[in-house]
Structure formats: structure tokens, C-alpha cells
Image (cartoon, rainbow, N blue to C red; front, side, top):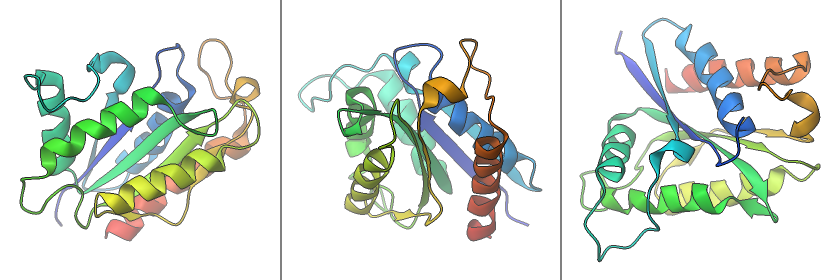
Length: 182
């Protein structure tokens, strides 16, 4: 059986990052499946400058691009900011321009699972935005998505998830990604 590599990309600048915690739960469940390895990239810790192809490429951007390129699948997570993905998330994804010269380029034929966290109830807006980005980068989105509404009431101040239904959704999501990959 081929080893499956799944990379999670999530985070925010405000700890605890609900999107990072949610993606971590899904990755943990995926990693329980035989032959699966996972990596979680905390974009809040990458400290990437605004994407600019006229500057020297930061080492963190090169590592990000290499990890994404080597992955069989990805899980993306972002908080909802003003009806869309966070600026931090979008900037991180913009650095995937480094994959444009690879063969195959960008996210060609990779499956990307999508998770969002929202203070209100409109988390699906960030999911929709991420889906457009995945398509633009030649990837495929997993039909099963997890928009988490009212994240402030579901995660406590220490970052613990206190909602069994949401935990089950995230765990099922992690298992579904592996099932689709196989």
C-alpha cells in the first residue's frame, strides 16, 4: 500500500487559532488510518512577507511549496474575515505561485479538503472562496466540507473543542479524505 501524505494548512495570528485546531483534529483522524502520514503547517508561525515575486524567496515559502508539492492531499482551514478567507491565509496560498514551474504545476490532481471557522454563521463563504482558489490552482475539492459557525462558543479559551457533533464532523471529514484518496 502506498504511503499517503496529507498536509494541513491553517492558522491565524490570534491564539488559539480555531481553524488550526479544527484542521488538527481532522488530520489526527486521518493519521489513524493505515499508511497515512500528516503534517500541520501553522501559517501564523510562518511569518511570510506579502507575496512579491520581486523579492528573494523566503525559506519558509520554499518549505511550504515543497511540502504542498509532495503531498497527496491537503486540508485547508481559515477563519472567516469579512465574508472571505483571512488575509494571512490568502497570502500564504499566494506563495504557492512557487509551484507554477513544477511538473505538474500548482495543485494538479490533488484533493483539498476545506474547513472554515466563523464568529457568526456564514462560514460557508470562506469555503466557497477556498473552492475557487483550489480550482484556479488545478486541484479538486472534497465535496464534504466543514464550516464551523460560532467558533467562539465551540472552542474554549485554551483551544479545547467542546462540541461532540463538530468533533464528529471533523473526524468523519478526515476519514473521508483518506477514503477518497484510496
